[in-house]
Image (tube, rainbow, N blue to C red; front, side):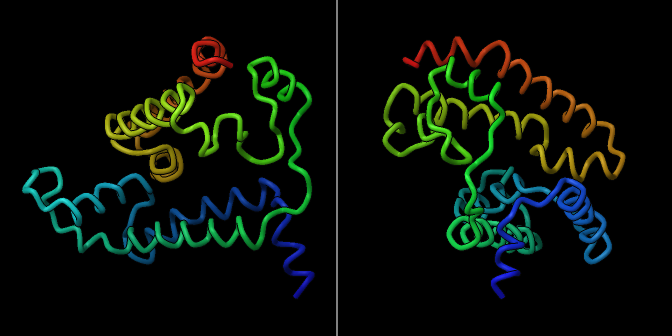
Length: 193
């Protein structure tokens, strides 16, 4: 049992993890003619919780209960992985990336997300307002505008040869490059890094 725990807590190589993620698409299609995507589950939650007659939320959400169970499994799996199967080794980050982040004012490299930005104590500060509230709004707006999230378009859409998904994924990547290389530094200076 300890060997299994040691094996599962190590990062898996891309050539194992990638095909496993990729096989999710045909599995969902073959088993139940379902499409992969996470952002649609938020719509289902709203349809369940907000029975106000809003046309966008007026549909038979019960047919999509499988998606809610999928998201619940993702949450439970994330909790188990974080609390019981975390990689015991130090997080490895390239020296150049550390130098670039240090130049932006980020100094905590102990986990997957720097606590300089992603911590409860930051939530009610200018940093928190910018990165959590404004950033969250932009992610939600972009997801709705693009008709789906990155996982839905990049994994499901492209693999099923949907032209809009390819276009959306290209612009997701371009947006990430622009944010990383052009906007992140000035924004971090603006909020006091």
